[in-house]
Length: 141
Image (cartoon, rainbow, N blue to C red; front, side, top):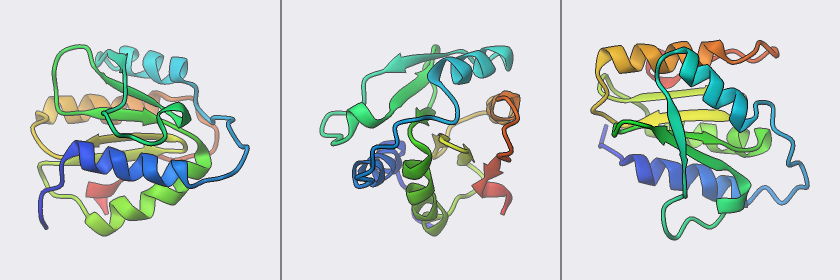
């Protein structure tokens, strides 16, 4: 599998969100809930503006680790995540990457995370309140 950059994967997510066309702006998980879950897992995040040229900046929120690390967590709409997830599946993952989803939250790293950091990201995704959505980790498939 070819390596795909985190930015390219995030743009894929947001292009899909931009194409939603619906008025559904409700979020299964809020940005505050995601920040809290990652903080509990000892992997604090901060909000970051989306990369230049991302068409749907208003459709979701980018979160990145406080300490520099190759990870982006996107909190978007349920529908946007539903539409983007098959794209991640088709690209696939490898042992260096981590791509996890829980409802409207997608965490993406295409390499460079330590095994400890990956474990914390997984823990944070599991820390989100149980609302009937499981954590889907692409690399576990």
